[in-house]
Length: 142
Image 1 (cartoon, helix red, strand yellow):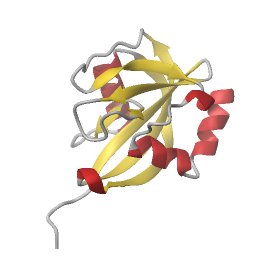
Image 2: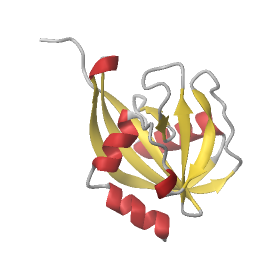
Image 3: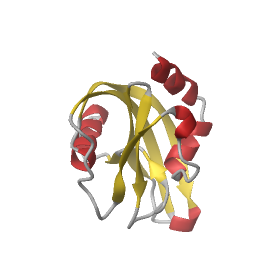
Image 4: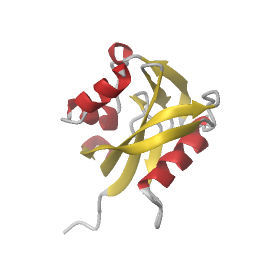
């Protein structure tokens, strides 16, 4: 039996004016693909705390109305990674998206649902194929 265990990640789908904030990953697994802000859930941390922390660390923006959206089982055999990714949705509160982790991301940009780039991370691709995507689309239109 393998010693490897899945890790728990948080993906934060931030909505502003009907658009999602996505960044292009570099320098780590899933490089050259696009994903939402997020990262590892820390010991003792709530999902909301993690979503706020990771968003601030990666983009410098603040979020509000943070809530659960769904969950995906993300197995990336080429990267030898396995994540249970908790999808969180939040509304933009304030700040200008800034690339605060230049070694991990090329930058952040707002995308309408139809503009989401083809090169999706496994996290984003799996979420977009999940039953939870319909709720995200509704929230982006409201």
